[in-house]
Length: 255
Image (cartoon, one colour):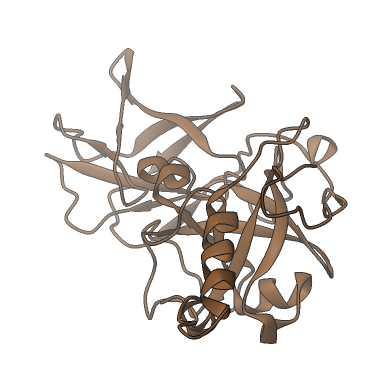
C-alpha cells in the first residue's frame, strides 16, 4: 500500500493550507515530456505487498517502482526499468506493480529507492524520470510456467529481459504462434501447446530478439536459458539529469 505520508499531505483542512493542498494536487497531475523523452513528475514511497504485485514479480528488498494504470498499460511496462532523478541523485528502478491511485507522472517507489533520491521524511518529491533502454541485468532470460498450465493451456512469464516486451511467440510445428499478453505479466497460449519442451521467441519494444528452447511444463520453477536480448556492450549507464527548478503555480513545468 502507498505510504501514509502521501495521504497526510492531502489531508490539510484548515486556513490557507487548504490552498497549498490544492496547489500540490494540481502540480502532481501536470507532467511535461522533456526533449530527450524524459518526463517531470512526483515520487512517493510505499510498502511492498506481502506477495508479488500486479506484474507477478517479487518486490521485497529491491529498488522498484509502481506506475500509474496508463503507464502500466495492461502489464506492458512490467520488467522494464526507469531512471528517476530527485534532489539527492538518480536511482534505477524496475517496474513491478501498478499503482491504481496514481495519475500519469506519479511514481510509487520502494522505500530504499526513494531514500536514494530524497529525504524519506518528506514523503513526496519532484522528479524527472525516463524509460531505460538496455539496462544491465545480471541473468540471462528466464521463464516461469504458471500454475494450472497443461498440455491444453499454457501461460509463461519471461524474466530478466531488461526492456519492456513487444511479443512472445511459441514454435508449433513449422510455425511461430503468438502468445497473448495477460494483465498479470504472463503470456498465454490457449490452443493446446502439448507436453513440450517448448521453444519461445522473445522480442522487446526495440526489436531485439532472442530464441530459447528446452522450456518444460514445470509450473512455478524458474528455468534459465543462456540467451539475452542484448550484450553487455549495449548496456546503458544510469542517466544523471538535472532536476528542474520548481515552477510558479501558473507556469508549466520545464526540463
